[in-house]
Amino acid sequence: MLPNDPNASTPEAQPTDSAADSIPTSTLATEPVRRRGWPFAVAIVLVAVLGGSALFMSGVAVGRDVGKSPGSSISDTEAWQPLWDVYNAVTTRYPLAKLDRTTLIEGAIRGMVEAIGDPYSTYLTPTDYVGTLNDISGQFEGIGAEIGAVDNAGNTSDCATFGPDCHLVIVSPIPGSPTEAAGLLAGDIITMVDGVSLDGLTPDQARNKVRGAAGTSVVLHIQRFSAPAAATPTPGASPAPRQLLKEFDVTLVRAKIQRRETTARELANGTVGYIQLTGFSDEGAKEVKDELTADVGKGITKIVLDLRGNPGGFVTDAVDVASDFIASGPIMWREDANGIQTETDASGGGVATDSKIQVVVLIDKGSASAAEIVAGALQDRGRAKLIGETSFGKGTVQEWIELGDLGGVKLTVEKWLTPNKRWIHHIGLTPDVAVTVPANTPPGSDPVLDKALQVLAGSAAAPAALLLAA
Image (cartoon, rainbow, N blue to C red; front, side):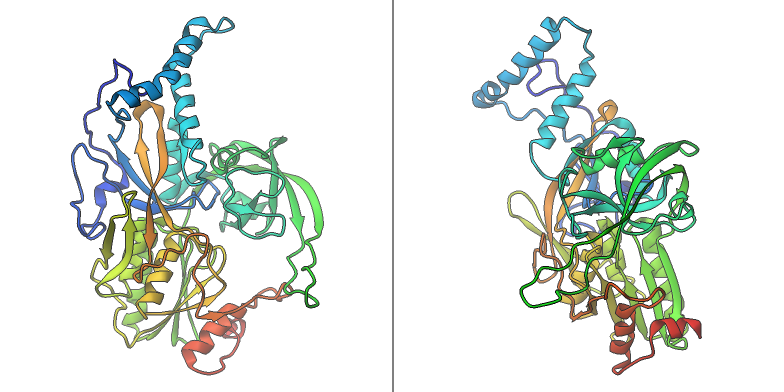
């Protein structure tokens, strides 16, 4: 109901089947895991995996029963009266159609959340709410691609709506997906869906245009650009702009996607364990632990954790992954609207916490949210060196507020900080070893991974591509 509706009632707390049921007790060190009648949550720093999407939307907690009237004071009642005046006028005097009350309430909620002006807070319809939670779990229906937002120069953006200087981009096709089968590439811009421009849409709205039931078709209008210039050609000159190489329509048949979040292999003649993590779900965290367990069991003492292009996921799973390398003590801090900071400690049981195990973490401008929680924790605690580019810079947590038949709201409710209490929002994590990947890098070569192997070896190492071929 709308605020101060005299007929409104406070809903009773109900059990939920969400991932919140499996919160480890260490997630919020100073609070109980479950509280009846109070918002509880798995905080997830997420970039919605849209059925192909990885919009940097992250940091989320799943909760319910937080709907309350905004207050009982006379000033609050008077402040909300204009809303009720408009609602009554619309429902009693609009002559052109019979209006649905639910639609009006959804519109009021959507407008309130959008008025915040926060790109990470949004209203979701019931279908979108359930679909997004499924996406985060790693199972979804759609085109099978991680997607994000970039500006005209191809740089990652956290814009609130798409337009002249903000575009929907394919970050990476998911292996075996319709996106990969269609030959779409990382960096391809999606400008229209089924012939309709995405300009003016929020990231969630654009995501919903792309996603859909398995077996249905969607037409994407694609712009493919040249890679950005690697460096400024002369002092004081601007980098050369990207060039449009081709523009075309492509029809994709959506499918059910099971997103495996880890890829693992051995490098340097079996002396280095390499684990790439592309998202943070319960399954992804388990896969990392399994791979680390296997590496440690083989006596491997050098680990590369690749978080490049990782848009985030559940905060609890980020804490679990960081805890694989950190035995005890702080992983992160969470700061609420009142400035109260709560320490979140390692969950224990880590399989690679021995200081004899050397760790490097690969990051880039696509490493966001939960990926930054892990990288920031390992950097601050002196457990790993960060190698690559400055990360995205997403330092807030969102809570998912369930609204029953009205869907739900994703709302920014906290800041998160590194163990040393750095807030990296809009700043990102600075790598210990910076590596710029040239625009003309040959396919199959990986300068960042090459540098990581050099750091682990303590000297020059053979290029990663050669090691893989061996």
